[in-house]
Length: 299
Image (cartoon, rainbow, N blue to C red; front, side, top):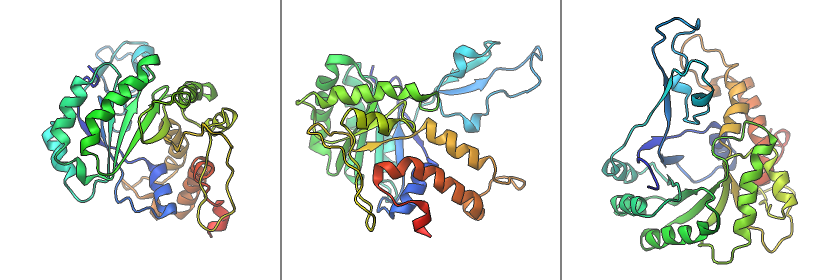
């Protein structure tokens, strides 16, 4: 099965919300994400082996699964949950959803076809359909073309292929980005790849742009009013974007943890000094890709 279960979850990624504001994008809302999502919960600590009850902070869990094999007490379990595709279809008909992301495992098209048939009546309401793909070797392009054949009759906006090299690992270290860049190099060498934008994900971090430059696959755009941004000349320049997930959460999380929380949920916009720090962190990632001006020139 390509998607073990399908469900929907709204992901609000701070770094992209910040980039959204800087660029004054016309996209109204962020991405409605469809995927098999892993949640973890801490089993009841009946033997009081550790001083902290509750273990996993459920509200902060985004399903990376790293805690499962390393828990010394083997007390963490994964919990999946499902959202009916019919409910998802109704959400897409609302006027505040612009994009949908569908995660796949590369193991067949039947489940994807079933899901797509459930959504096709409402898919015309979104501006972008993103499909996240693992690298499954030589059969990757054939699999992508099969998916595109299913989607093509109903897509009225843009489509995007997200090359997921090493899922949820960008915050581990520099080497985590090698797999996704290798995935991009492989796709750039194939002429029969399906149409659409291509974006890197899975293992992306602060080293990704440099690795793309070395591979001759980096191309940035120019933000209006700024100097011409860097472009690496290559007939195989393919990658049009980079999705920062775990690494973005890591660096922005450092700032968010500094925001006073005496009164529960707070808005970072109400704390200008922390907002400025978060913007600086966001621009360190988004700036090289989008050609945004330095933060000092925004004031």
